[in-house]
Amino acid sequence: MINFNVPPFVDTAIDYIKECIANQKICGDGKYTKECNKWLEEKTGTKKALLTTSCTHATELAAILADIKPGDEVIMPAYTFVSTADAFVLRGATPVFVDIRPDTMNIDEKKIERAITDKTKAIVPVHYAGVACEMDTIMDIAKRHNLIVIEDAAQGIMSTYKGKALGTIGNFGALSFHETKNYSMGEGGALLIRDEKDIEDAEIIREKGTNRSKFFRGQIDKYTWVNQGSSYLPSDMNAAYLYSQLEVADEINEARIANWNRYYKGLEELKDAGKIELPVIPEGCVHNAHMFYIKAKDIEERSALIEFLKSKGIMCVFHYIPLHTAPAGIKFGRFDGEDEYTTKESERLARLPMYYGLKPEEVDMICDTVKEFYK
Image 1 (cartoon, rainbow, N blue to C red):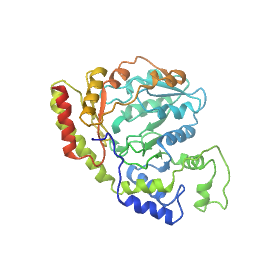
Image 2: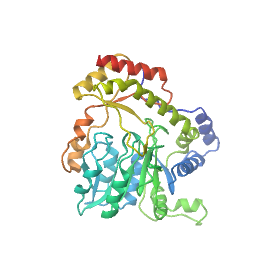
Image 3: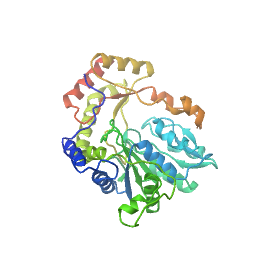
Image 4: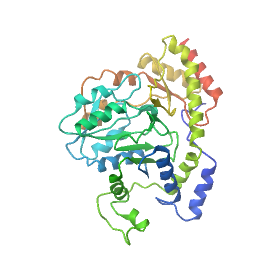
């Protein structure tokens, strides 16, 4: 059986977790949380990185920092995970869904501006599969309409757009370190903050509304409750597990890229024959091989392909049900314009196994099995 996903693991993780226990420091903002924050700041060039308990919580934190309020509208694609919308629904805002591009499955930047109303407060581009949205256009729209940009870069660590790390282009960026991601701490995420003016507020909100971070830096002699907040701090043991992978991040990234390229080469003949479509990487985008997907003719063919692969011991899955068709999406949001591609393209997409440790010969076997199905 070839699993769809195997969480990444590096041997040093055990030693680092044991160190946390031995030092009797297993709560948040310990040694390894600080090391992860530092690594993220140096790798991405963001002004400040704050590890969180999930990408969901990083997005919630960004929504609070953006002062999202009841009655506000937030533009995003419907083809995304529920957390993208939930963070704003919790603030009383309305998600306004727009169509996606069929080539990248990202939000169609050309359809954003017509969705803007006098209630629009933010744009939330989602970098699907670690491939960047067309950020120059999105940032231009945001600047002209005085809107905040919160990047959902859950799948985007190590990816760039015109040399800039995903999550660092907008006002805020949210990363995920869930067990299905390229680098994992089980459950976890991070908030990337572009502007220095937002750092202190972010630290306060993340620390239950207290100025505890300033206290630990010796900037004040006692800390107290100063604003609204919650507890978005992960355990330092989770951070220790993550940091072991960040130390060899390039090695993990290169292994994934090699398998992604192997998939593409192995399935290119089916693409050339018009049987399937393969991922598109636009010029100026460097991706991180977060996933490898193919597009079948329609939902019936995709379902048959998934069942065929399963019968051969290969786990293959599809992705999101578009949010605007979900009960909560209908209740809390609305779709602007025509759903030309969101539903149609989502029903064709199938994700093949992709994880650190997937062997090249396994990739070859998966490609051969897909080709067998199309014979």
